[in-house]
Length: 468
Image (cartoon, rainbow, N blue to C red; front, side, top):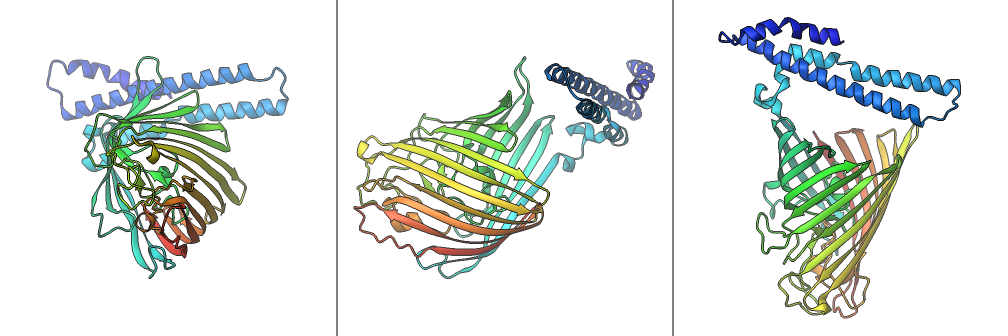
């Protein structure tokens, strides 16, 4: 392998030195470019072999002193397979020799530097009389396009174009979603490599923001709490000894690219797999002062009580409030020959601090979601979730996107909102997801509310989502 790489390099050294005296031809420039590529691959190969040798030495050092012959044979075969896989650069060599334009962004045609993907979802949705789809109808639920353009090695521009957001064709027109510069594999001294995003990105809180899109969500609805949002700022991510972390500093306000005070929101998320079937994450967020926070609960932002809707418990005169949140998530996965699935759960809490303490609010939420799939094609899923103040005298606003409509109906008089959903799904391939869902929402109001709970809120829906 090394001979195959170094022979052309050695043979071309005289040619490269002679180019100092005469103007290089296009052919000679291409050869020089290939030399650089081959040298890079040699260094990559050497680094890989060094990593393998270090891992094998560590593995041998940790192995028990007495092992039976069968286990030693298996280890030897695994080591040989690892080494063979790492030193086999046949495909990379073919790419570099046959098509050297893949070596660098500047030498590629523009269309090779841009990755385009997206998804769209449409369906039929119907609810009982107290919910938002009481007549039933067909809708375009969601549609988005994503563009990622490589501008240099490990530097890219990510651009989301939302053409339809949660079925609101008339209210939300085409607009940008996430839009950020992405710097990968940054190395400083002996520190682990890290990445940076600068611009507008999803707020890294909880887990639901990662699967909220219709193509990723096994159900049609989201959880009762549904914490998500995006904001402008800077995000750094890396890992240390198997523990992944994300740190983000953002404006903290709902207004796009507008800051209303000097306070900034700070997010810290820790996640990883302590054992292979179990995934755990912890998310912390301090939002700072804001009249309307960037993060929301299924359509309900942190705001002073009564700022956006009616409130039987009074209306705060404060213009801005402080808020902080925490969420714990766990997911246990299993796999067999024909079945795979998981049990996921979340538990979260938040505190809203008003200058008038009578309008402080403490929130609590949780969800439980079992999922089972047959041959990665057919699946069944259920989700129970709720959020509330759980105080008969202190209400808050919980909208329950998109079927509940709690904001306009109950304002800040809700003390508890619950959602139960059951679904069946079909995924003939990873890019197609068809779903059928039935469920119900419930609202529980504070004692001082003059409103009726109106809980005729069963819903049913059929949806198909396509991704590319």
